[in-house]
Length: 116
Image 1 (tube, one colour):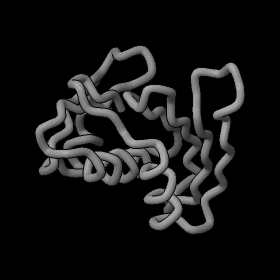
Image 2 (cartoon, one colour):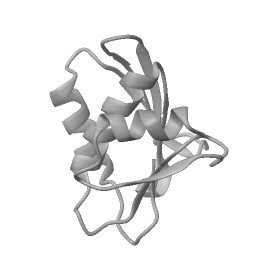
Image 3 (cartoon, helix red, strand yellow):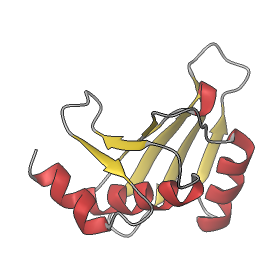
């Protein structure tokens, strides 16, 4: 997920909300490292373990896992971002992308991936 407008994910809020939603999630703070990431996380989801990274600058979060789990996580992330922000769900190489709005459904996310 990438925020294309001026907004950012607040790092502390993202981590707090992630742990509220998934209390058993594993997180690893990377703030003191030279990596572009601030946080790595693993979440036990319905169909898979979702592996993710929150990047410096608060403009993007990458994650991988079962498609349905990724869609659910993307949907949850989108709800954290104000409605006026321009947010895109995409694959790693941006071969497929979908504008995420607050009313984007899980099926729309899955369909966008499957049709790419």
